[in-house]
Image (cartoon, rainbow, N blue to C red):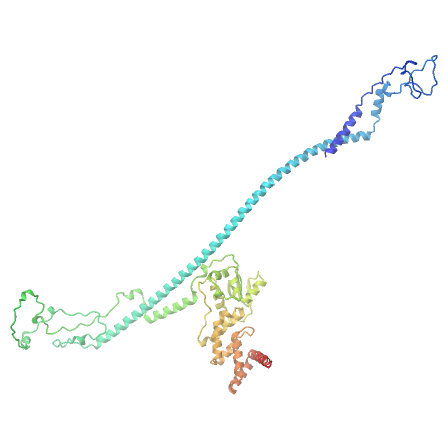
Length: 556
């Protein structure tokens, strides 16, 4: 940029010098030297004197030498005209170029000023950018600190939430215990009232059987016989002073034993109080009054109590109904959901997890469980994915799904609802438990339908393991009825049914030692239920393969 400015200024200066060129000064006339005067007057043959024509001949003194001709253009009179003609004859393109050069030089100066201003502005912006960058770094550091503090607060909040859940569970446990004690107290009160009624009835019977002594007032009454009732809370005996006096003639008729006088020291009776005398002894005892009936101090009729048998029966019905409707421990209303996603492991039993881990499965959206077009229930998706392998696969492949549909008629609706209700309770209950098993044989089909629902929904076999153990024990004990075996075959899930597998293995083992009647029964079962026949064939083939493998090992 500076080199261009220097070039333009250089050419501008040259242009001004050309336009204002100085008038050339005239040359000074040098005096001619005289001939023959000294050494200086000599002229070399090659030297040409100014104003002398070298081609002219030699002049002698007789001829006057011509005047010297001036060859310098500056000494001419028309110097100014010559200069004017010279400047006027300049080319117009050169003039135009000089003007453009001046304009561009001015423009360059302006641009240099603008560039300087831009550079200053850029430096100012860089300084501002550095300040903003430092402020952003400070804000980022503060944001990270706030995020770390927020995570810590979330952790503390979660710990407090778990502690509150434990306290709520403990409170519910105490409430349940109080309710049990109140129920026990009510039953004891009912038992006391029953004993009162029994005691009152026994007392009335004893009063009717007791002989009356009013007809023979003069006869002595034996106290031991008069006090025969078992419950005599209060016995009223008349005062001796109020008893009727004995007639005088009867007193005379009583013979007293002879008194023997014995000598001895005299006794001063005044020093001893007189506590008893023969005159004060009653001859007859007043008859005993009827014993009073023992009654409670509280009148139960004021409280609208029902008769005892009806009250106890109604109380038992209420307790049974409340035990079925209200689950043990906490309520789903006390459940608090968060954004935490639990870790799923369908092979792990949810009953072996602590309460703090189980409550996390209540998070997430609520999905519908359908059987055909019928909705069985609505549950948190996470607990369904943990307990059911089919639900875990379904919602993993399609995370946006809001329902899972099982084939219509594939299981019993009530049995499926039992499992779904149990899953929901595992997300907020303080204790763990399993689906209820009815031990009576008349509930065999109901138990098998519960197992079938678990297989259809893809629940882990451990959740109904107690059903499997009880029923397999019955199968191995040879006490199972034909109806029980038929129910197992009708409700079987061949791809995953340990109870059905146990039945098939047991029947295959019994074929070798079965009697003719038993063999015919087994054949009838296999014909009636092709699924059982197919399973028995598979078991027989597996047993034959194992025996062949054992023989090969023994031959080696």
